Amino acid sequence: MPFDFLACPACGAKVKDYKNPLPTVDVIAEFPEGIVLIERKNEPFGWAIPGGFVDYGETLEHAAVREIQEEISVELAEKDLRLLGCYSDPTRDKRSHNISTVYVAKATGTPKAGDDAAAFAIFPIDALPEPLCFDHARILSDYRRKKEAGEI
Image (cartoon, rainbow, N blue to C red; front, side, top):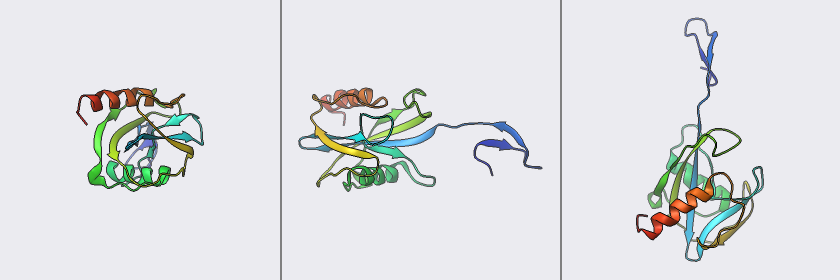
């Protein structure tokens, strides 16, 4: 079965092209000193919440744990993830329409840059670097507001 167009079930001919948004996950990894952000190795360049694309057949939670391991080499358990929210603005990523499910988790260990990260740093929420990629300024604003309200 093709994934980029609708095919006639009888003959297999292309009937209609279609595109679906791509699911992604991001994880705000909390340390006592602040949150981890990565400096992206690939375009778009800038600082970002660690995360990435969900693989076919993978749950959002498993993708979040896998991506945080790949991006900053920190182990998290799925049970430790807390949902911050879902972000679906079609313009949030200039590369394609991506929908991100954003989690928050307390992290331990020593992070190190990996995968798509050129570097990483831990920032207090009131001293974030610029530029922030995608819609991560909005996400981190929501995080700060909900954290201060005791909602997460």
